[in-house]
Amino acid sequence: MAKTKTDMREAVMTAARATVQSHGYNALSFRELAKEVGIKSASVHYHFPTKGNLGAALARRYTEEGAAYLAELLARSEDASWCMDRYTEIFRSALANDNRMCLCGIMSAELDDLPEEVRAEVDKFAAMNVGWLAKVLSRAKPSASDQDLREHAMAIFAAIEGAQLVARGCQDIGIYDRTIRAYRTTGLIP
Amino acid sequence: MAKTKTDMREAVMTAARATVQSHGYNALSFRELAKEVGIKSASVHYHFPTKGNLGAALARRYTEEGAAYLAELLARSEDASWCMDRYTEIFRSALANDNRMCLCGIMSAELDDLPEEVRAEVDKFAAMNVGWLAKVLSRAKPSASDQDLREHAMAIFAAIEGAQLVARGCQDIGIYDRTIRAYRTTGLIP
DNA sequence: CCCAACCTATCTATCGATAGACAGACAAAA
DNA sequence: TTTTGTCTGTCTATCGATAGATAGGTTGGG
Image (cartoon, rainbow over all chains, first blue to last red; front, side):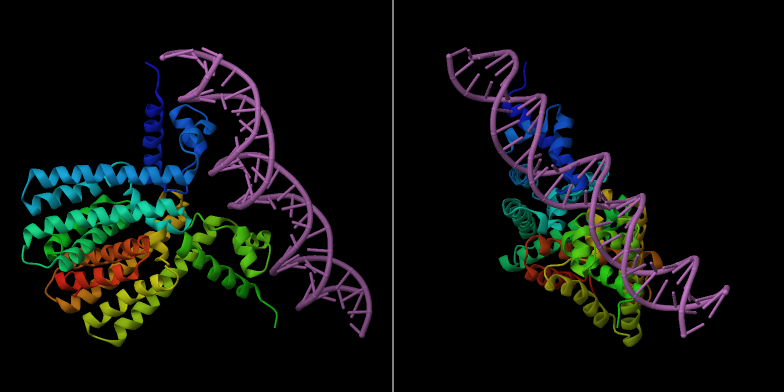
């Protein structure tokens, strides 16, 4: 069973995603990527004409997969607290997995080096997360205005990204755990 | 009035700091840096033998200056809320100034590409901030344990770094403002 | 036979780093 | 005072590595 074009695209994207989450968009190299999946760099260009194209595809896929998983959570339980536990666990597992970061979080830090097409996808990821969080929050406080819900949701998203960033910087996942706990204690996270 | 060795070191560090806060450590180039301060890249190596040496010097200086400013705040007012206002304003002004980030925040995202000497300085910056925040918090809740204070302090630090990261990613300083406001509403920030 | 998928080979640009030269400052020796 | 020697800061030139990207050739399954 030979590799189809789609298979190869998938393999490249998987390897690329791991690299970006560990080392950032700038560290993404066509040569290294090619070596990892067993082809040559020119062939990677065959699948993804430019680096910006690859980066945008990565971010888009990342957002899509995240959205699918989150939708599943939302369908499975009415409990806001349970949903938030699963949510914080997503970011935790990235750290636990070789000190990786949220793909869009690490890309945000490299914003000025990103092609416009990648930047747009980073924005979409944030918007998707805020939208989901606002939905979860609306269950916990049904009386709040949409405006308030969105602001609260944005605050939670930013706080979690920050906890991940700082914990990663200190190479100490315990920092993430304690910080999330403090978020719950103060009531930022329901 | 000719430039002294110290003057040149200062000029290089100033330019380098601006570059890192805007584009990250990886984007720091001896050639670009040299061009900005009007010398050649070899001369930059005269002042800073290696890139790691320069990066570590930058982060150390950044922490020192920050610590000095924060100490001044602590001496000027007993009011925790006022101190926190000034604190969040520091990170806000970085964003307002050409969408820059906290030097150590952006370096945290590039952690795997940092020489060990730079990594150590990034850790120190976080520790310094948490220490100061814990001191401010101890004024607002004198009965809390040191352990609780430090965890709360870490949560605030991470949340603010995250707000900056996300606002930068969306290129919208309003996101930072609204997020900080939400932090206060929930009581995360006193 | 064709064309999708991959290849070889190469281009230009940039990176951090080093070697070695040179001009000016300055201090000690004559 | 003049000369001599050393130190400082910068320069030019270059190294090997690596980056993204491209042109054009090879190959194998439908």
